[in-house]
Structure formats: C-alpha cells, structure tokens
Image (tube, rainbow, N blue to C red; front, side, top):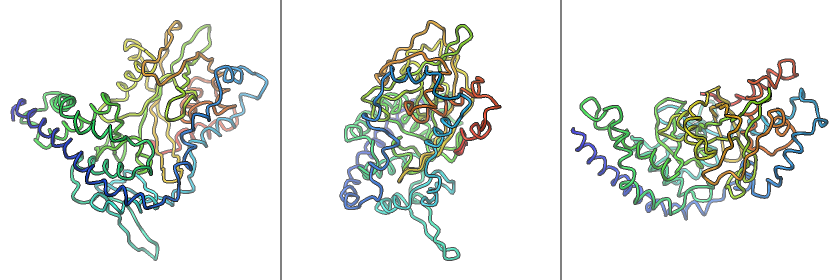
Length: 428
C-alpha cells in the first residue's frame, strides 16, 4: 500500500473512530439512569484525603520558610517524620482482599473493588465478571468481553463505561470533551496519527495493515494527550510491555491500573550548599491546591518517552529551555500503593535530577503554579518531616534525593528500612 493511500485510509479510520465514539456515548446514556439508582458504599467525600480541598492548604511561604529554618525543633537524624510521609502514600494495605484481579489477555492489568464490580455488571457487553468455587471459597475476576479484540475497540468501549458511571468517578471529562473527541480528531490529529505510523519508514510492505492502523490510532491518542490535554494512560501489565487499551487518568485508580509519572528535582549548588527550587501549586488547581510541589512533575501518558516528557514539563511548568532540560539525569524510581474506598492507586514515579545555573529563575508557563522559592535542601527536609505542606508523593521523591545526596546518613536509625519503603509498590 502506498503512503498516500495509507494516509487516506487512516483519515477514514479517524472519522470512523470519532463517529463510533459519539455513537457509543449516546448508546451509553441509558446506563446513566441505571447507575444513578445504585448507591456506592464509599462516597467521593470518603476519598477526599487523596485530593485535599482548597481550604486544606491554609499556609503561605512565610509559614513554610519559618518551619524550615527553625533548627531547635528536632534532631535531623530522627527519621520518624519521613516514615509518616511514606505511610500516607501507602494506606489501606489490609484492604487488598476487597479487590479482584482485572485481566486482559490472561495478564493482570489492575485490581477492581468487589463493590465497584456491581456497577460494571450493568455493562455486560464490555465487562465479564467471572466467578467460581474452590473449596467453598468464591473466586472472581474481571475481564473484557470477548468481542473487544483491538486496542481501539477496548478504549472506546471502556471510555463510554467510565462516562456512564458519572459521579462514581470524580474528575472525568464532560460533554465538551466528548464533543472534542467527535469533531476535532479527524481534522487536527489525523496528521499526528499518520506521522506516528510512518515514523521510521514503517508504512510500506514491511508493516501489516492492521499494525499500521494500530500505530496510527496511538498517534491520535498521543495527539489528544499533548494538544487537548486529555490524559489517556496506557494500560499494560508492566512498563514497556504491550498496551491493551488506554483510559482517562482520573479513572485509573478505580480499575487498579498501574500509572507512571516523572518527577524532577531542580537544584543549584553555591558555596558548597545545595538548594532545591520548590513550587507552590495554584490555589485553583483541582487537586492539592496551594500545596508545595516539585519544580517539574507530571503523569506519563501514551506516546512520549520519560525524557521527552520531562523536557516538555520543564518548559510548561518552569520555563526551563530545552538547552538546559536535556541535561536532566535519570536517577531511579519510587513506587507506592494507596488503597482508599474503591480506589487502588498503584503509582511508579521515574525520578530525575537537574542541576541548574545559580542565576536561573523558573517561570511557570501553564498557570498551574502560583510561585517558586529556592530552599536549602536541609530546610526542604525539615518541611517534609515537620509539616504536611508538600503534595504527598513529592515527599517520597525528595526523600530519595536526600538519600542520594548524603543528607540521610547510614548511621541514622531506620536508614535501610526507610530506603526500602520508598519502593513499597510494584516497581515494574
């Protein structure tokens, strides 16, 4: 197939994709009333600890800096404050038995609360709830309907289920986003899909038509993520393995999907002392408004590498030019598991360090950060140990920085236990 014919076919597929999404969404609307009649045992308010309200961040830089610089409050060798922050990110470990495996092609891709599966039964053309008996013990797992064979079909079908579940999953995109899927995909993303498929000269006799279409589809997904800020996460059994489908970021914990992100410690070194650039999140952010954050951080959506994501986030969140951000160094990963109500949050964060010029001053470009401050590393550690000012998972990444740069020493009681706890989740 020639490249021009392939791209024409892809355009047709894109149109069909968006039309199918719109039709499937309309078909899913009867489920809204069905789901509305149900009552979840866990309200959204019960999960509020994972996303504090705007009132929760009742502090300013003056408060943070005062706590940070007070040398008489405690002993820096006391690691108990750090352990508390690790525990905050690893709640509910005793509740794992309330969840069942979510399987795709016989691979475990997630975990779903038994109560949440009651809502999925309403969508029996998308999900199959499998039960059995073994020594009088009920066995159960969730899988996808056998008719859903392709990544594209699964993504559309599950996306419509998620929208049909409505208020059970806070933060899901509204009708405007659905319209955006339906009308803007062919016109604005087909080119990205075609380029993704053609990358490396893959359009041609060496690539099957089905593989070409699949490659094109994920190019469209990447375009939606980057251009429209629709956070579609790839669903895999582990990092780097085949992608089965994608789903919106807010829904990932409700299906126990492992999500990946990138966090970067931006620091300077002057007169023998290291200092970290710390951001304070905008007060209008939907999650963790007004709390302290890394200089740069973000989820890892489909279609972009960790390093390219860091470079993109550097520009958007801190105004760091590519000439600087390309020097960011990969230094490892941390992981955690947070179980709360229906949510089974399995996160792996890839960590980066970037040493910045002493005269560099960050500037937020996307409106998500209120302001930045340069804080000595020891003082940042004090804020973590003494307060709840930082966004929860940022604590773990900075603690990892403290280990690697020698601020937490081997002779501190609990050193090895704390080090191990930074990877409490499945780091795969």
